[in-house]
Image (cartoon, rainbow, N blue to C red; front, side, top):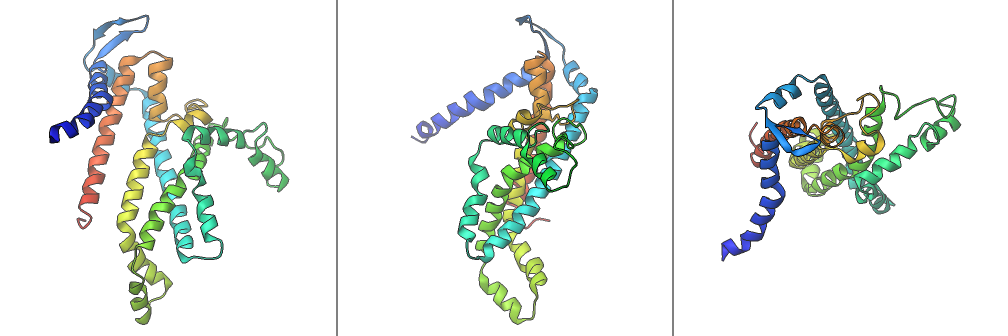
Amino acid sequence: MLIIFCLPAVVMMLMFFLIPAVKLVVDSFFKYDISNMAGKSFVGLKNFLAVFTSPKFVLCVANTVKYVVIAVTIEFILGLLLALMLNVGFKGSQIMRTLMLTPLMMAPLVAGLVWKYLLSDQFGIINWGLYKLGIINNVHSIMWLSNPKISLYSCIIADTWLCTPFMMLVLLAGLQGIDPTYYEAARIDGAGTLKLFYHITLPLLKPNIVIAIIIRVMDALRSFDTIWAMTQGGPNFSSEVISTYIYKANVRFGQVGEASAMAVIFMLALLVLASIFIKKVWNPNED
């Protein structure tokens, strides 16, 4: 009976994860002729060697790490500040909480398109607002998406807007689960606001912090929709991350073998990170 109940889940796993994963690994050892997909030749580890020696792949890895570190750090800081503010409770806090969760209802692709138009150097409202405030000389001063030096950071702005509410929600749930008597006892002993935060709030909030950061790191590593909608990895690979580079190699350039090799490397890296994070969550007292 148990086997019957588990069978649908097993079939789904086979269809949507295991079989594609096995095919991905197999494809990474072959070189395909895009004019005839039936024609392929075994090349062993040459695809992996080509990936590891590719300057573009190294650049994409660097961009991905930069994107994840900056985005998740900003989202954590903003999410924590907003959670602390909403946890205090004030007039209109319920309305503000609802408004803050609005970005979570938007698909990443749609969010990317919205921010693409907001940051447009031709008719973007961001440049127009900065111009009206006298911060920039004209509405074309900042090339948010076409300047290689800032295009990646423009994508980070969109990701921060989209995902900070998630961080805030997880941390707020943790804050509301802290027993107020801890604070009352500490205040009786003469503890100030900073001591309450560092010695009570942060330690008790640690499980929520770890879970929120784990989920966001894994999600940011796989970011594709927002970046693709805004810059498609350009200009000149300045905002190219691993996911967009794999897509281009496979679909646009027909490099099925190399794209599969990159995907295998990426998948293994995610599995290693996931196992480390899961071990940390399941052993929260282990330092």
